[in-house]
Amino acid sequence: MQHIGNLFAFIGGLGMFLYGMNTMAEGLQKSAGNKMKQLLGYLTNNRLLGVLVGALVTAIIQSSSATTVMVVGFVNAQIINLTQAAGVIMGANIGTTITAWLVSASEWSAFLKPEFIAPLILGVGSFVLMFTKKEKYRQFSQIAVGFGILFIGLSFMSDSISMYRESAVFTKAFAMLGGNPILGILTGAVVTAIIQSSSASVGILQTLAMNGIVNWRSAIFITLGQNIGTCVTALLSSVGANKTAKRAAVIHLLFNVMGAILFGILMFIIFTLNPSFASSSINSTEISIFHTVFNISNTILLFPFANLLVALSGKIVRENGSEEEEELDDEELMMRHLDPRIMETPTFAVNSGIEEIVHMGEVTLKNYDRVCQELLKDKPSKKRLERVETIENYINDMETMLSGYFVQVLTLAITEQQRLEINNLHFIISDIERIGDYVKNIADLIERNAGIGGEFSDNANHDFEHLIQQVRKTIELAIWAITDDNMEMADKAIASEEKVDRMEQEVREKHINRLTRESCRVESGVIFLDIVNCLEKISDHADNIAKCVKNEQTLHK
Image 1 (cartoon, helix red, strand yellow):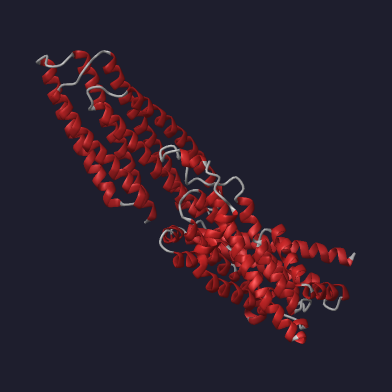
Image 2 (cartoon, one colour):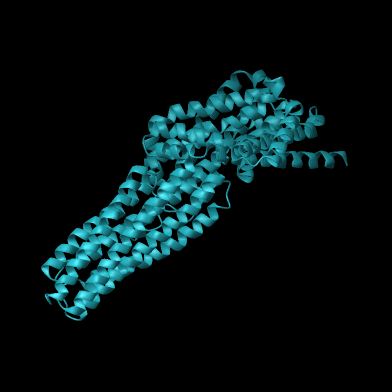
């Protein structure tokens, strides 16, 4: 019964360890807030910054697997390219060493021993979480609760196996794993693949090391295998993704396999030359040191060959020349940023949604340009007007998908400020969709005018040209305001809309004078006024978008 009780205690401790790590990561993500948005911007700059971003993000979310899955999502959504992804993946391996150092803290710092400080941290964090409503304090208390549970779980695992320190079964098992490097690497890879967290599997290995059960040879090869096993999550995530995303997952695998081979050969030579060192016990801190040295050295060694890794991934995942994306134009590649893999990191999920809103705005603006070109022609193209309607249907689909996406994001670990921001984004999505509706209305009015054989006078077309340009400027400024969260652009869009209102009044008065003089047909004259009304409504919705951006800026203060 004692052995069963110890097994239960180990499983319970592992559960607490994983839950604590997840809770702490959620708190860290919320606390990071908009800083994560800045990190996303760095991804698009250069590969070296990508390494730093990968390390920082992984340190925050406490999982290199989650970071790599997120990168696969970014590549699939065309946010970053493969070369940039390679840098982030390398950095993710460095960032994952933070958890190992946390676990080994009980050895190199008496103050951080789980049995000493974890209950206090957990207690203080829980009290603050229960009795405060201030978002900032709740975020830090969530980090404290996760930190405390993580260490208490670690203590449970350690206590449950402490009695097996001298067990012949463990000694023989790890001697066998150490004697066969391939078996040791496979063991580490399989355990990590099952748990889907290299941080957790390294933590388990460190717990065994704390009790003197693991020797140097077995620990090193198992650790190398753990780095390979963490690739399974990203490989599974890439199923169903495009070819480029699959290559990102393959780059992760190639990077870790190459590193494991290089260091595996080096350590095998060292252990062969020094058998006593190979069979000696390793402690938790020494595993942290090796884990860190391995990942940093591997990045330094392979970083110059990132382009070669990209090329090699292209050899493994080949183009078949029939990718659907190649046959479609930009307007038909509608939902390019909404990849479910990005949900692994809520702050990035919010920002990816904003990217897609901007894309929706750009598609709508192109449709506006298309319909205005037909408006100013003597003989509008029926095919292009049908195209306007087709794109409008896509815009409607985008609204539905974006709304559903943000509902999903609301279920993630996001801050209260981000929740309010998402509510604001729903209004922006709706306003863009309404602009699309009015664009289609203009197309219908053009067709109706053509159907009755109506034509607009040169003066009417001249008025249209000026109004069209000013309305376009308002839409464009509003989209720029969303793109950069730019208050100045929002103010310019609002000012531009006011100018549209004045122009609309002038155009109406001039047109009524033309009707009075009977210089244009009444039927076409009515259609003219309806189109002017649509243009003014489009400008109104662009104005709404700009005001939403200003409201969003207020939320950030």
